[in-house]
Image 1 (tube, one colour):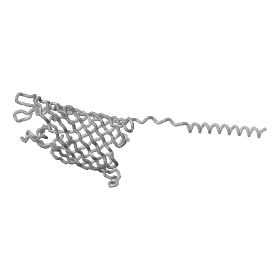
Image 2 (cartoon, rainbow, N blue to C red; image 1 turned 180 degrees about the vertical axis):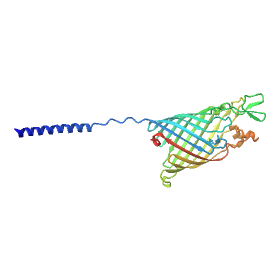
Image 3 (spheres, one colour; image 1 turned 60 degrees about the horizontal axis):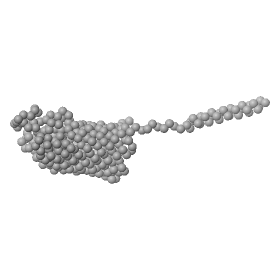
Image 4 (cartoon, helix red, strand yellow; image 1 turned 120 degrees about the vertical axis):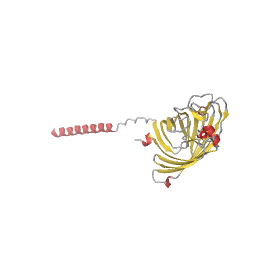
Length: 309
């Protein structure tokens, strides 16, 4: 009887142990909760310092150095569609002496295979501008008088719509055509269309140490500018072609770029487009802001999801 009880007790204990192990196994093999959906949000930001702020072939800093910074929130709706908005700020030296230039923009970037598109809207804001008048051979910021006439518009703010594309042909070549359109360029009343393309050659990574890189790039574009009507008497503004070519070295998030800029504008037509005060004070009626220039730029660019952890 004792042996039977012992055997029975042993089987009972074994059954208990088996049940416990099975229960533990069930708990261990329970399916894991799915991870929370990834956020679409990302943030790009950066800045830089350059020896001259050249915008479409024309100096915006009176041939002097300029600093800039930007912030761009993004939402990657899918791997091929990105929504974005942002602001860039630039230090300037312009005839109406604004605080600076601030570019407010937003748009969508869809990608189809090797071609990435970019469609958007941009507003160029020049806060705290002062309209300049010319009277008796001198400049004045006072209200106009019978002997004074406006030398600049009162407000240079304007907006554009744009379309861009980047065709990544292969690992070393990318081509980027674009077009911008404004119905009222710099509040002059003139319609303006700016179109061109960039070409970028990425140098082989084998040529550089780890985290370093290099490229050679160029750009050519044409500006079609209409009729100035802001002061009542209309006159045609000159169209022009601009181009640049240069090279850069990259290290992680940093870039050093050295570039040659030029346009086909005469110095007289440059003065007509820019209202460069130097053209009056020198008595030449000309401006050097559109002439050839070699510009050095040091910049950094980051994204929160890639560079900030």
